Image (tube, rainbow, N blue to C red; front, side, top):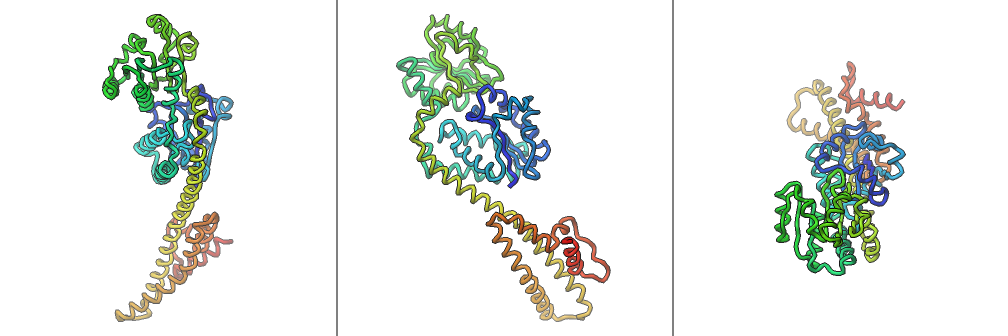
Length: 445
């Protein structure tokens, strides 16, 4: 397995660094192309969410300078970045991807959003051609593993989520959510989920602003709310007690001066901001104002951690499933690895058989159909007996760790490495079998 993964997440890197690495959805296709153009990378895919940025690759020899790619692409020095990176290869990379897709590596274990985000990243990479055979196999299996984990462990059955924690924090600030107004800025799935929780707990009305006005209308209609044009955001936002924001803007859209304006128009009635954007939509300076309560994604993580102890047993069951699925995937890849060698061996020996029959056919004279069948049967029987032991050995080795060594030995014994480069012309008077046998001896010296 030549899989290699590098990245940062909410556990390894602070929000300030994740903001610098975040890739907007519009830039993701070009970034995937840049990754696959990097030396040593055959296939590549990028996952960029509020909690992680990861590069998943299949490389030419099992190792590519992915740290160098990150340094160059994001203009970050090794001193700034490397201490926060994690890197996995081969089986460890497969395990990480299975765990991530199954939401075992998420801020909220069992949350459903990460699988959808991974599927979207996979679809983007496939669309630009940066995911093909090897990564396609890996992620197809990862999606099946995630489904199995969710079905067999109920790891996602608990109600704890970023959205539910946001509701709890809002209750602590306001005492009750009855009659409160909610403003959604950015019509993303996480924002919609948080808004749904808030409305279910008694909030009175909802406003939605999005750079694409049609999307704002569509989301507002789900809650019988009101769509607001993005240009009118600052003139309307003070109407809300609770603001959920996730826009994908490269810089904060709510700054200290906006907070001061909102508080003045609200006569200092408090406002609660749930900022689930990376980079952040709410400036840390705005959160210093009395009356402004702002929570970013890392603040919510700390609040979530106190709620998830009851998931530990379910997570253990899920980890056991992941471990078995990683072994199954590795064994399947090893089995696939031996198939080209078996096919090459069969083709090689069949070529020898046909050449030997053609060589002696002139000396045998005219054969009856029965004699032709006898020659065919005899020669095929010999070839099948020659192939039996190496093919059986290859199939057995496919289930073991030494598969690569056995494959290499068989290819050397039968000169299959040279055969891939094109058939050599046999010397005058020599059969292909004799020629291959001599080359095989020479290759071992």
